[in-house]
Each structure stands twice: as C-alpha cells, then as structure tokens.
Amino acid sequence: MVESLIDINQLTVEEIDELIKKAEDIIANPEKYAHKCEGKKLATLFYEPSTRTRLSFEAAMYELGGNVLGFQSAKNSSASKGESVSDTVRVVSGYADIIAMRHPKEGAPLVAAMKSLVPIINAGDGGHNHPTQTLADMLTIYRKKGGFENLTIGMCGDLKFGRTVHSLTNAMSRYEGNKFVFISPDELKIPDYIKTDVLDRKGVEYEETRSLEESIPDLDILYMTRVQQERFFNEADYLRLRDTYILNEQKLKNAKKDMIIMHPLPRVNEISVEVDDDPRACYFDQTLNGKYIRMALILKLLGIN
Image 1 (cartoon, helix red, strand yellow):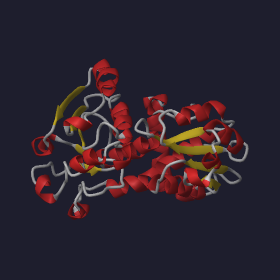
Image 2 (image 1 turned 45 degrees about the horizontal axis):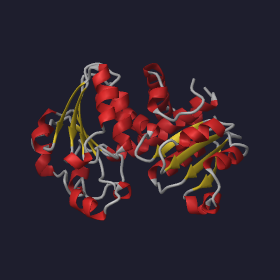
Image 3 (image 1 turned 90 degrees about the horizontal axis):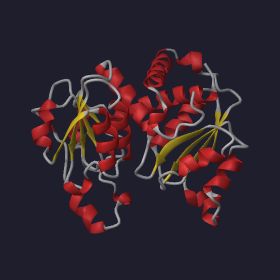
Image 4 (image 1 turned 90 degrees about the vertical axis):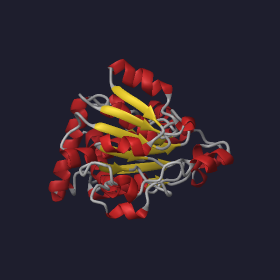
C-alpha cells in the first residue's frame, strides 16, 4: 500500500481495480461506510482555485463520518506571508490524519509528502499530474464500458498543459488493446515525454491529428479538455486557441451510439450545452464518481477496510 498518492503510476493495476471495486461497494451500500472515518480529519490545502476537486474531497470525508479543515487559496494561508510548502505541511500534518493538496507548481505535493507525518494526496500539481481525477475518470469508464481494455480513446483540446490527460493516458496505457487519438492544434500537442516514456515504451498505438470531425467515428471515448487560460504566458495565444474545438450535436452525428463524452470540468465553451442532454454525455457522472473514488482512496490510505 502506498503511503501517499502523488502519481497514478504509484498504483498497480491490481490496486486500481481494488479501488474501483471499493467505490462500487460504497455506491451500493453507503450506510456501511457512514462511520468508517469517525474521529479522523482531512486537511485540504488548496493553493489554487478548485470547485469540484476540493468539494468532492470534503464531501467524501463527511460521508465517511470524518471532519475537514484547511484553506481554499494561498492568499488565505501563511503562504501569503512567505511560508514554505514544507513548513505548512509539517505543521498541518500534526492536526490532520490525511492531507489533500493542490498546488500550481509541479512537484510541490511530492515535496510535501517528504515532510508530512500523514499521507498526502496530490489533488493536482500544475500541468503535471491529477491522479484522483484519473481515478474518477476510470470509475466512469468502468461503469459505462464495463472495463478498461480494447478501447479507442480520443483526447481533444489542450493536451500540452492538461494534467488530467497526462494522468489518464498513463493509466489507460497499462491495459491491453487500447489506442489513443490525440486531437489538438500544433501549439497544444501532447508532450513528447508522454509519447516516448509512456506510449512508445509500452508499444501502445496512437496517432496525432488536428481534426475532431475525421476522428470521431472511430472513438469509444471522447475526452474533451478546456484550453486553460491560467497556463498561458501570452493572452493573444490563449484567445487564438481557446475556440479551436467546440463539440456540438452536429459533430456527434457520426459518432458511435455508445461512445461516451468525458470532460474533467470546468468547461468554458468547448462542449455546447445542447450536448448535456445527449445520453453519451458523462461529464456530470464523472463529478459524482469523483466523490466515491476519493472515499475509497481515503479509506485505503488510512488503512481502513
């Protein structure tokens, strides 16, 4: 069992499957888990804005019978006075039993894990990793597709800075028969290290394209992403690229009837609201599944059955 979860690759396939099974049991039998974390405290240290991730962690702990403390932005913490992540975590780990941390700098949760007295969960670090979003994505895929093998997975939009894309590609490349289609403008292509260190090394099939319309008929999963203004240094580049891909019902006409549409949210305008009523739309399911899988992960890291 891992002591902290910083990167999805820390979990074996067997451990991921175990978490999925536990989340399914939580969904089926919520009353069985309502008091599992009585007397336990989760600290949420969020150095950048979050709605779904932070609230789902809090909801997860409350539904397990535990309590929550923490802050929701760096300006509301001693970071605004210059306190280091290491010092903050060393202090807070004396107040809580487990910590969920989001930080704009890649690697900050790893530094935190080295100093913490309790397990750290990486709730997103810059454009690097977002392992609990990946677990939420995988629970959604499992519930809609029945498994993780022999799927054609389209990733569309900001693939350069999209930490959810990087983590999910890492995870799904470990299962047999999956193929990836990376759909993006040249400026936002999937990083080379994902192609060489993850896909090429494992012999996983993938292709890169600029065309969503040409790719969509082959996809079992379409994972849309937001072009993230906060990751751009240049406002002009952001404005030029933000509307590159907008999914609407017209573009879905050639898609498979059982294709699922995913998005880590928040969305801006990359998925038209008319798609929300399409039975293939699963992005709101993802948010709910995020609560259940985080409940399963908290139990695992605390060593509670």
